[in-house]
Image (cartoon, rainbow, N blue to C red; front, side, top):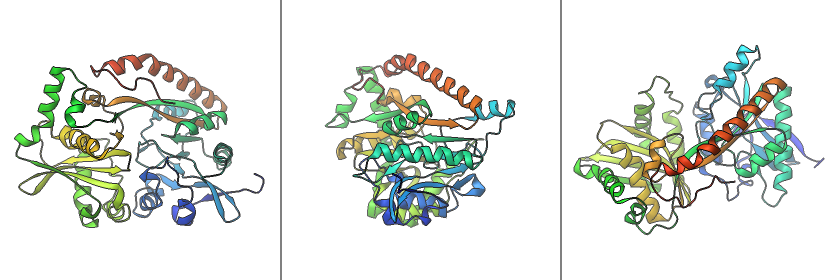
Length: 388
């Protein structure tokens, strides 16, 4: 590996698209695409003035890109969904500087996926560990307090831990398709009383005189961006902590350049959209992203965000539906708890030791609560154990 060159890139655009795409493998998601990541930077979303300064870490062999870790220097922790505000506050009380820090993630996206890309056919573990080691060293040399690798894959968690990182567990709720033949087949997992309640929720939009459809691919274009942005902001603006991370220009870009990977669920009355959900899809996964509504109706959120898409996942043979961060209410609707992982390294030895203790205690608490999480759905789980 002594012929490798370590480089830090200040933008996605500074990396040739063919080189980026040469690292693509079966574990990639649409969020790792060159177009998606570049759009975030070039439409005013993941930019320095919003606390995201690109520092993409790469290993090159001559003109050949062998490994890449998209990364950002952060001046806060907003839009990460692995919450470390308690760590930051503790650091301040101990007179330890916490920001800026380095985060390896897709901005504003709490979805599992590659955080270290490596060229297929090469020794993945060797390249990934080499790059992670370089990332940890580079962060310290740059005066960054820490490195945070968010929603990484199981193999990356093992590599990061081997390089000294603390591994933190979190919980999301994912719907999984073991091969359902129909929506009724899915409902058959529940007790009779629960089936009746779920059917009532799933059919509520019909009684409200709405239509519910999904547009994808050629049926979407940049012209839909203002509607998607309005739906997105209708939700984030409701909350004191809500932030408009994404711009209309971002949605214009991804609706054009990532057209094969996006979809829009629309609830309409007499042709007018009153609610919707912007989702991202791969052949095997559906990722629920942004919901919004202009009218409030009972169960409309569940119909648009869950039941309609579950039915479509069944008809299209999609295996996993990730509904995003949070939401224990998903469990009673057939979503199962799923362990997520993140890796953390602090440059301050005392803070690093404290974070390692915290992560170990948090993992133990999650493991203790795991049986109750599974039982909370009131159904027999078909995949009962944390993965990895």
